[in-house]
Length: 109
Length: 117
Image 1: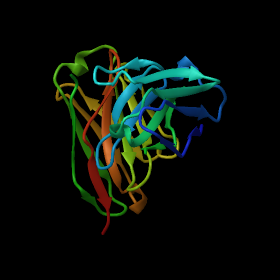
Image 2: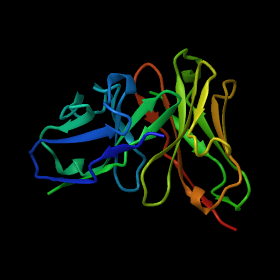
Image 3: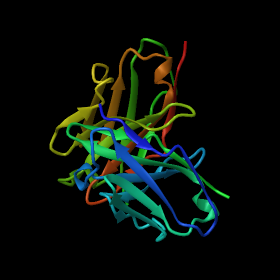
Image 4: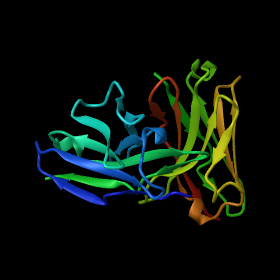
């Protein structure tokens, strides 16, 4: 089964832009993997921020955006806010299976 | 907006079968493009995909769990179910159901299942 890798942790200052990535052990991530991005705060269920690479839910703050970057899926946070401190997971769909990324802990400091 | 709610026993004995139900808000399962997932998260760990069932009737499972897992749908009750057999302490986790169709993915609030005698 594929392994999906994310940065373990990222620290960002308020107002600064940061990009999280999601890499597949099978090769380049494409739109055919339908990349999803989720945010999870302690003690809460995850919420979906991005689906199908770059589409946002109605509740997704405008400062979050999804893309493909250098063979990886990417989540860009443009102007981090203290409330963005959370764990972020990606999810990739493969033929017959799906795999979550290892998660990135984002600290806004 | 799609709403999902997990339910089931919070405590299961080792070697027994874990059974959970996810009730999906009315109307969603009449869509021709829905898909429903079970996901779990052991305490202090990351998210783990268990399986996905599609409107078409096809169901996919995580290979390492495939021999123990059954996911099924009862459209008349708007319910998704999960059965995981021969559980061990390693199956202790918060179990989530999630659903998508027409764009996006919606999550239930999750339910903690502890495997212990």
